[in-house]
Image 1 (cartoon, rainbow, N blue to C red):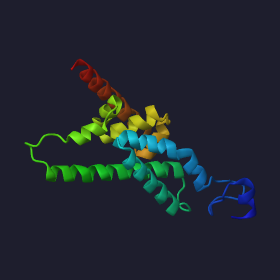
Image 2: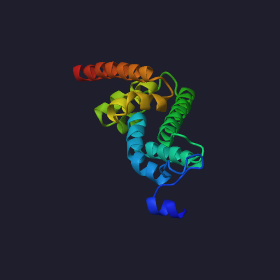
Image 3: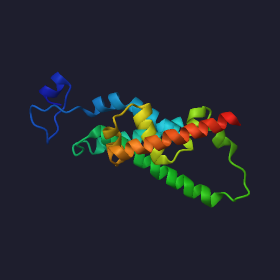
Image 4: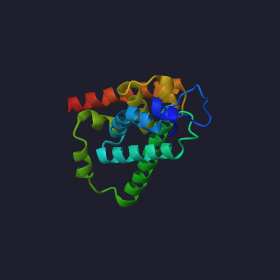
Length: 176
């Protein structure tokens, strides 16, 4: 850490100009870790999994810190990609291990205590991620779109479809 970094607490990236301060990894972590954890928890429904996914995403950002242009977007994109991979692996494992006659796992249902979290889990993954980013974490559609790797209009559309499905799902649960 040079004299300028110690004095301002702001590091300079190699590609940044001398007058263009760039945040440090510690600044990024302090600003984003709670929001990312909450988003991942709402997507995966398990605090340990969310914590693990969050830590892995921040580790990947730290490993590539000198090359990442938009660290906040990169950490969210990395976490969401890891979530998708994990869901795909779990789905394949479930298909291999379950037969049609077996009942649903009661432990999976026990993990989902809150009605909103249960309803969120019924949404398709991309819709759930868009809804969490736009409505629950209050990201602008442009920022959410960058994190999801889609256009802003697609992010808004995904969230809109998620809201409609969520409303229907919650209404059905209250009728039963």
